[in-house]
Image (cartoon, rainbow, N blue to C red; front, side):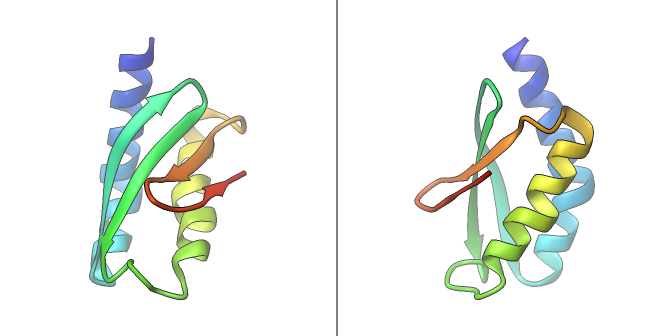
Length: 83
């Protein structure tokens, strides 16, 4: 089951999130799926960007929750969780 969720999360990030993040010079990588917690890593111009919290909540989390359910919590490796 976790592998299915990992594959689904990766597909959602590839299709909906990565193009937006990369358009602004950032990069995103799926690190881990553990239950409803999905950990990503942001790099490139995302590091230190003042829009990072917005991107996490309104782009990453919204895309994942719309496809995987409202219980998804996005955590950032080396950063903050978004509930």
